Image 1 (cartoon, rainbow, N blue to C red):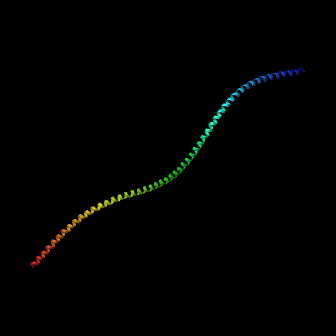
Image 2 (cartoon, rainbow, N blue to C red):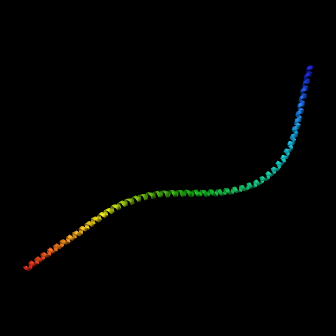
Image 3 (cartoon, rainbow, N blue to C red):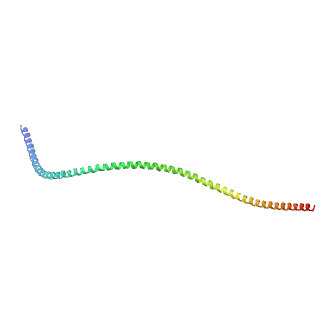
Length: 184
């Protein structure tokens, strides 16, 4: 039995130690509870300032909403302007495409014109060569014609001389015949 008593005493000592630890823990909890109450007071104070800030935010939110309405209106206006710009851009793109087609056609015609001009240049070059040949031929013909003219003049002079000689010979013959006929 004494052992049982010892065990009971021992358990009582342990319970007593645990009670003291609990009292100590309760004291600590009370201190912490006081600290929590103090913090709760500061939280309440901060909550009041948060409420006032929240009211300020609500007020600012109202002005932001009205500004947002203005922004929406401006956005709608910008969308309208953007649509007009898109239409203008589409028109300009169409006109640019037409202009590019015209430029390509002009370039093609310019190439054709350049080819024709090259051909004409070659023709002119050939004509100049032919003209030079014709001119040389003409100069040769002029020299030949000049020689022929001189020959013709010389021949006419020779013919004239022959006519004169013949005329004088005929005259002399006639005169001699007349003389013979007169003398007969």
